[in-house]
Image (cartoon, rainbow, N blue to C red; front, side):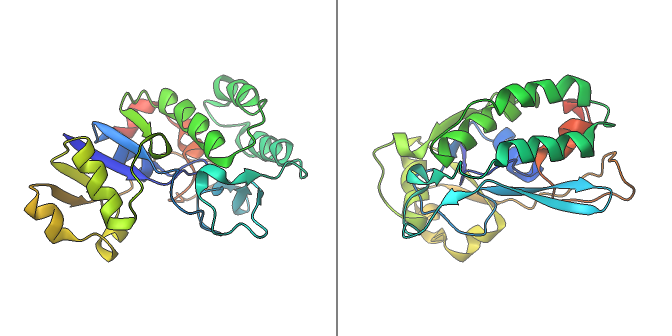
Amino acid sequence: MVLSAHQPAYLPWLGYFYKIVKSDVFIFLDSVQYEKNSYINRNRIKTSQGYVWLTIPVKTKGHLSQTLKDTEIDYIQNWKHKHLKTIYYNYQKASNFRRLYPKLEKLYEKDYPLLSDLCFNHLNFWLEELKIKTKIVRSSRLSINSKKSDLIFDLCKHYTANHYIAGRFGKEYLEEFKFKNAGILIEYQEYQYIEYSQLYGNFMPNLGVIDFCMNMDHKKFF
């Protein structure tokens, strides 16, 4: 059984989904610590002037040690209107805009007090768009409280996984000997971008999933 895991992410990049599609179970790691200036609450889209960041403001003052499941969204700023407006003006000429944009308007209608809830529900939206059927499990719903390498190891044992797909930075903290002794293969993902048609000139990699979905059919992803 193949397992993978990753922290929540807003408009995740394609490598995030490639890891999911290769797995039998994907763990949505919302029980770990929030990281400031990461891709958890922001991502990039392409414009005629290059890329821009779309960022969800969060309440972090005095709470930088909080877990993701407790991180609150700051709705004082009208960020949802700004994001939809930015998406509209930069993708209105994309091939899938007329089909996808009304869905996004509906998706953004609901206010989620917690960042992890928004990311989880948005992730399921994009999984449906990409026709990915992998089972998704929130780590905050499991009774596993270990950290770092032990957390991943315990998740693998919980699901009797014999194959774990890690990100390339997994080499920095995974205790490989422990997995090897338990008969669990660690595969370090090195996602290689396949260029696809984009607006505004030369191809730009590492954008949020919305860029792909606006421009391409989901079958091209596989």
